[in-house]
Length: 137
Image (spheres, rainbow, N blue to C red):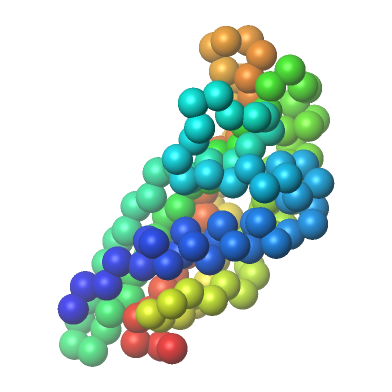
């Protein structure tokens, strides 16, 4: 049976980020799935998610690519990189518990910073590779 771990992973990632004091020092409690119409900067938002199922006899695993975005405004790139450093430290190669299965690993796949066309917003993009197995509890 194909298990989609996306919701469980997002719940665990969000909980981890909200409980991290370094994340709180930069982003407070601004970690969003759905961004408000007029958000307070800086904040973290859920980006693209890709699930690659690994199915077979007795296997119900997935490789998930989860992208998180960080956003700052009216600050230099150093502020964005500082927040990104904390975001990576909170998740890369750390233990993560999810409902309905196990996270076997979570590793940073890539990170980049992008200046927004508005000239005042900076955007960090962090993609994590997450291996899960629904048969391991």
